[in-house]
Amino acid sequence: MATAYHRKKQPELVRRTLLDCAAKLALEQGLAAVTVQAVSLAAGVTKGALFHHFPSKQALVEGVVADLIAQLDADIDAAMAKDSLPYGRYTRAYVDITLHDPMMTKGSQWAALHISILAEPALRRMVSDWFAERLHRHRDTDGDTDLEFVRLAADGAWIAYLVREKPTDPVPELGALRKRLIAMTLAGRPGPADGDQT
Image (tube, rainbow, N blue to C red; front, side):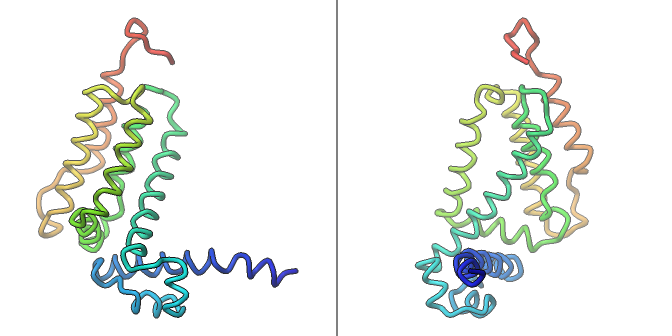
């Protein structure tokens, strides 16, 4: 019975291991290092096992990006769950998570990975589709222009960190910027006369 249980779980574990090894290679050496040979070797599986889960290198890379998006999604949902004010809830969570991104404090490896994702049209489309879906889902609470400006300011800060040449390049102090942007989502909220349904 235990053997059957482990056999059932094995494909999920192999897939998870493949994604983790591919993400580690991408982080350390860039997306170009994510090859079928390198990932199968790092994961300790055959190429056939890799192809069972991901029919091509592109499918594997897209799986890594989908995994990163899913983690971002979960982090935003967790932050939203702690926020009792409907107006701007998504924007506050987005700002908080975006400006806490580990790539901003762990050097250029994260920056290189994110730039690679944004430079690849298919991967950029995945990120764009995710973002559009989140905005559509939260359009009633986060659809106004003031909140859009706040999210764009957070994106601008994020890009400033991505493109800096060295850690000493001038960029905004993240803690203060994050607080200021979140405060802006509270200052602009509609009152009861504007139809606030809190």
